[in-house]
Amino acid sequence: DTPYLYACLMFKHVEEMRRVALRVMQTTYGYKSSKVRGNSPTPSSGTTGAYNDQYPLSHLVRLLCCEDMDEARRVCRHYNITVLKKTLTSSSSKGPKTTPIKSREYVFWKASKFSIP
Image 1 (cartoon, rainbow, N blue to C red):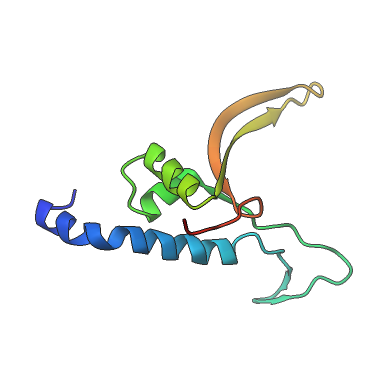
Image 2: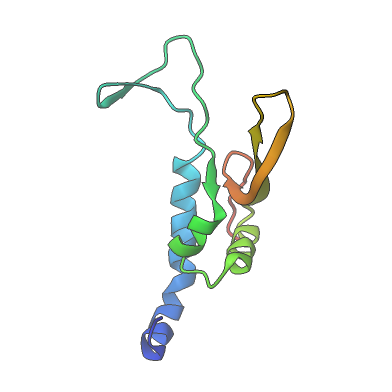
């Protein structure tokens, strides 16, 4: 909990901080990963790496100092950033049937077109 005076002082800068953070995340997420040998990444030879594309919306709430998930969704919508719900499933060893475990919302950077209104 932030004291009222500090909250008033920070309020002026929160919007700019969110905009800058989202712009940086837009450029760093959504890249293709490369194979890692030791501690240094090396370009994939002949294979295309997986996209580092998803970021949990619940983490974005904390990172951008949002009050709740609804505010984080509104911020993402404001900057044209895609948020989708993804259901995690578990497969049974007794057949091809899958069981939903839980549902989480993720920011998908590749599908987003960051823009400043």
